[in-house]
Length: 140
Image: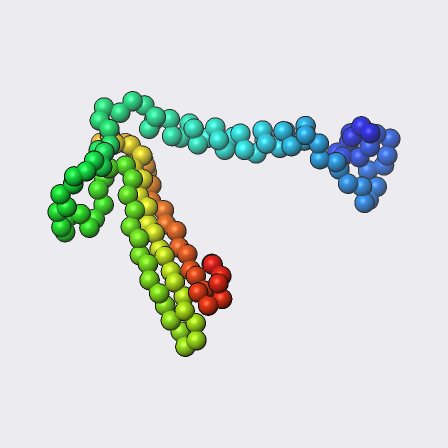
């Protein structure tokens, strides 16, 4: 059956109700190209300035490392990736919960250039939160 005229079989009236369009591989491919390809292309184009060869790289976390407090409680922009965990237990009258909150920092460009846009991204921050109902054996 050939589909024409906005999803109706050739030779039928447009007012036909209850007709379902078959989703074919060609339709899925066209949907992918029209929806996701522009998104992926824009991500690549927006990140391309950071893909240039940097003149200096991020530091490597190589042991042994001598910790220096209170400086080491904070962020280390010279390193590409780091994270902080906050974990614990909470108790109500009859239930016990566990939680974990994690903050991540990912360096994108080890060579931030002075000037330019204030919106230029050098570091990406994100977080994850999990809650566990220990008695009910559920995760949220």
